[in-house]
Length: 175
Image 1 (cartoon, rainbow, N blue to C red):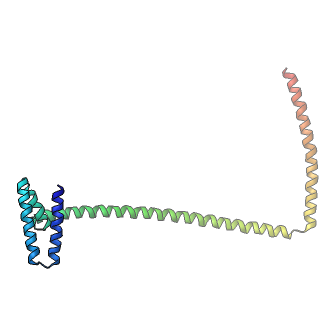
Image 2 (image 1 turned 90 degrees about the horizontal axis):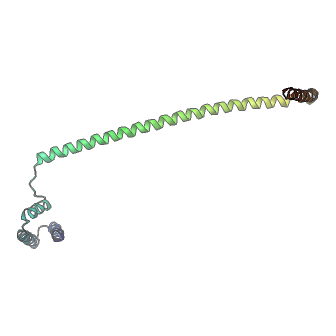
Image 3 (image 1 turned 90 degrees about the vertical axis):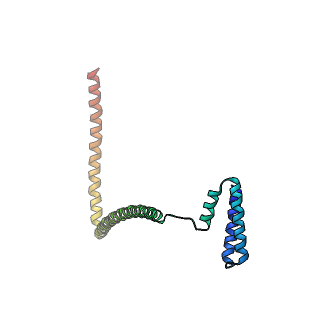
């Protein structure tokens, strides 16, 4: 099989030189001699039909059934076009989905930004209101809170003590 590949490479080289030399007589003679030598060699091996098929295919002189090839080629191209179209459709659907998701996310971010801006305005208003409160009023408010805290401290101590006494009584009754 390697000899066939070498022969075909040599034949292809000679064929390309044939075209380059613009059909010189020596090239034509070399090509014909090499084809005859290859045909004789193939006849000796008993593979002349396959050799002839390869030579005709190489020279692009192979008999072809154009109607079958054309219809097969048309079917193949149609199927590739259908497949490509479905791939493009799926890509467009995916792009649409991604764009929709991004739009939803941008809308959520804008909504959250508006909420944060509103909270900022409210906090700034509270800060301004507290800055405008006079200091004596704030001190009076602080003293009122401290008095209430002292009262609630005594009340907490009383409730704690009462809870201890009640739990001791309950424990004594249960035993």
